[in-house]
Every structure is written in structure tokens, then in C-alpha cells.
Image 1: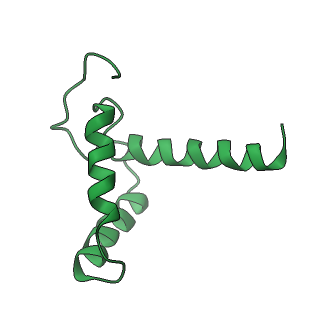
Image 2 (image 1 turned 90 degrees about the horizontal axis):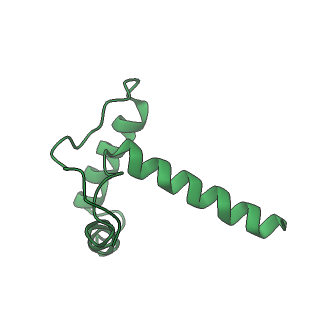
Length: 79
């Protein structure tokens, strides 16, 4: 495996961990992609960007492994 492929694999692994940390591992992929597209529209440095970043920082610092989004129900499968 080339160094570039290793880097890409690690990046995907880390991003998957973020999805799990948010409690969204069983969410529909279309839902996740839609949410990420909306997040991409948030202007860096804006009040909303800072608010969301602060939430994420606190979640990373949290020591418990409980899901942060318990209202997401298990999906019947990937689409």
C-alpha cells in the first residue's frame, strides 16, 4: 500500500470514528450526506460555525462513550 493510500485510509477511519462518536453509526447514509452538505454551507468563523465547533470540542473531551444522538433509530440497512 502506498503512503498516499495509507493516509487516505487513515482519514476515512478517523471520519468514521466521528460518525460513531456522534451516535450516527446506524443513520441512513443519505441523511448523513445531506447533513454534511448543509454543514459545508456554514461560513467558517461565523457564529454558527463557532457554536457547532464548541459542541464538537466538548464531545471529544467527554470521557463517556454514550452516544450523543440517542434519537437516531437503527436503519434497516445501507442504501
